Amino acid sequence: MCLHADKKFERFEDVTPELLKKEGVKLLLCDLDNTLRLHSEKEPADELAEWIFDCRQAGVQIIIISNNGRKKMMQKFCEPIKVPCVWWAKKPLSTKLTAAMDKYGFGIHETVMLGDKWSTDVLAAKFAKIRAWKVDHRRDVV
Ligand SMILES: [Mg+2]
Image 1 (tube, rainbow, N blue to C red):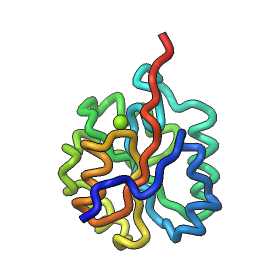
Image 2 (spheres, rainbow, N blue to C red):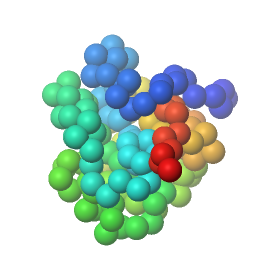
Image 3 (cartoon, helix red, strand yellow):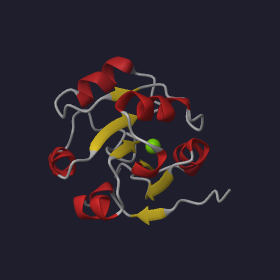
Image 4 (cartoon, rainbow, N blue to C red):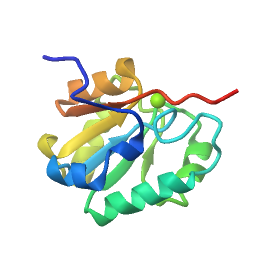
């Protein structure tokens, strides 16, 4: 089993709806912290809301799968962008990734996990036998 990320990007916006279409991606499982937002961001940035809208228009379902255990914070963040979220996912365990695929009826060939961390996101994808796409870890500018 190859444990490397299958594709690498600088930021989530580089994963364009066109690319998702071309790659046959119907379900995009996304990490939250330092992937879709900086840890300090309390609400979704405009770029994130727009990106999610565009992906949806292209027929891609997005689900956030985070190891963050702060359920209330996660729900509050995800509510305005109308994205289902799974907290305390315990990646690199692949249980929650597989559960999301089963729940929404997508197979391994049409699903991708997008995240910033090899030891959680990439490995979880590999265990779930889906593609792992990695973005650069986003840091708060101090
Ligand atoms: Mg992360």
